Image (cartoon, rainbow, N blue to C red):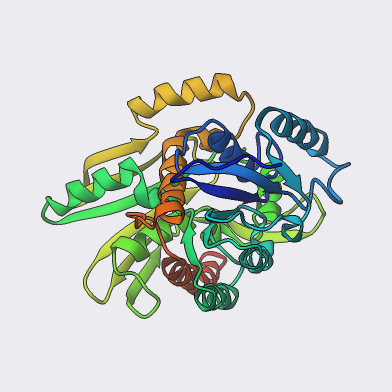
Length: 368
């Protein structure tokens, strides 16, 4: 029997745990099991891949060990499909945290609604295409289900501080910089391109596009101009582990100006390191920068590195923000309190529209 929720808690169904140390779902589970989100109780894990065809493949053994320990220590129930879940207990609210492969999300969300979930936390970008995400939005509305997105940078400290500084600085221009720690070689980037085949703008840089949609009036219709920085940006065609070719950006930088007069820049580099930041410039000169992790965060990162050796580095630098978004969504599910700053599925739809609008433009300009 799954764990019992306490008053003012919702029960959480984690859909798509992934491999320990590598899957975003696994890290969500770790935080929930550590009681980092007081409004949430992890009751069920649904993992179709590692409890199905992936059981004997890479990561399968590690998942089985995690499953056994989590079930024994916490009473969490593991299921292969959402259809296997028991009914929602009377008086309890159920939240689905969907962290599977992007292509599976539309199916999972429909199944989660049928399984009695009244709130959905959907990992970015939500779906592979705008059309699919719009259909998901419609299905959720028809069933009176609220959908919030895992765009954690919307609530994080470095974004807030940069926006506050820029708002009080005349003539300021903000650049959001996202870095990751892939090795700068064909094997590492080829694996990255294949695993994140939705592409840079729908994957790594989608957080930054969500910031632009949320805070800078960016929409497809409101873009006056979008100029990629050809000197910084790089687009390559590389072979993934399967032997198939994938074309994507390993790094990209661009500036968007809106018809309402706002201008903002984004820079994303898959091999740029483990520090992301926002900077404010006036007349091309940097006057402010706040990084993630900052000094306060670094102390937390070093603790987490010792606790989970070998895990993806970005889990640790963004650890507090993952907690914030999950707790706000869980609290909404349990009590109805609005989750301040958390992106809705409406923001997600427009963000994905912008990504689909810009990707072919940039590829055309940068592959010339």
